[in-house]
Length: 375
Image (tube, rainbow, N blue to C red; front, side, top):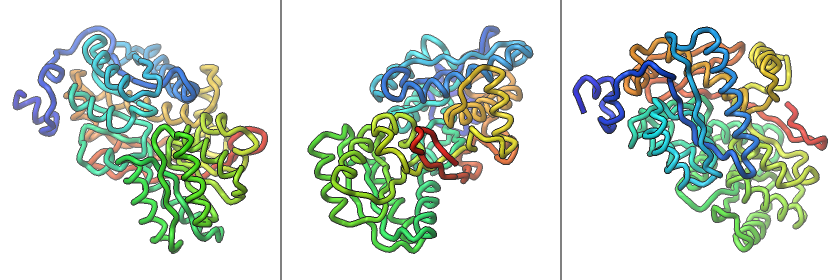
């Protein structure tokens, strides 16, 4: 790696082939891998469409120094192995200068690792993973709060409402163990005392779910946090309700989206509390929400949590690109390190990495009997 490029990239060990590319005069391309087919397709579509709309506004005003900005989204069907392939295609075939808004199975470790291998900034992944926030991956820039902040909010809410003992369902893998440890830490800090812990395999197999239901309900928790993927979590809710569990369910923001509710069914989904890490998008109570709703009306978009997250993240990206001269992966990486936060109207958004404190915004919504999220 050339010394100047190495300095710009903060000594991150990136391949020279990408960082050494000269600026081109055509479109500035941003790459995304997301599950455009399968149960998460609706969520992925909300994020993609809101990003396209922000870029459309920018391009109609002359683009970035006269160059249009374009989002290239490849479908990974919710499979991490396809995410890895998509990253290679985005870097080599589409020559993107950044990876943006990854969602689903590939949003965590696969996306971040692939970004490092290709020498690309990894921006606004829809993931709460702790190892994207501990400073060990300085090419990763987060918008949303992490799982640790969400679990702290849940534990505090459970303590304040007198729920007492909480349990958690997590996947039997490194990400699940990270979640388990953070849950235990936050529960103790909030004065909840003993916790109930149970894991399932990533696929949520019938045997795994059946054992998890029996094990966790035998611990007699008053509330259960859903931390496994949406498919396994949905099967667990159905099994727990069938077994007579009438306690509270909390779902993390990366779990409790529309895909979870669709799989659980309205009858069992009603009353599930879901942590949210962006402003509530269906109300005009805050300036951020009002501005987002106006944005949706102008572009004929359906309001959603994923949409408001994309709206803020893509505007932050555009703001940074305007200051990036010349536009390249290395220059963008260096500019992201010093790019300031933007005020969205009651929500201060920034693309945070090791140099800045990550967002700690968390709120709670409840899935209602009419099939909607309520603040």
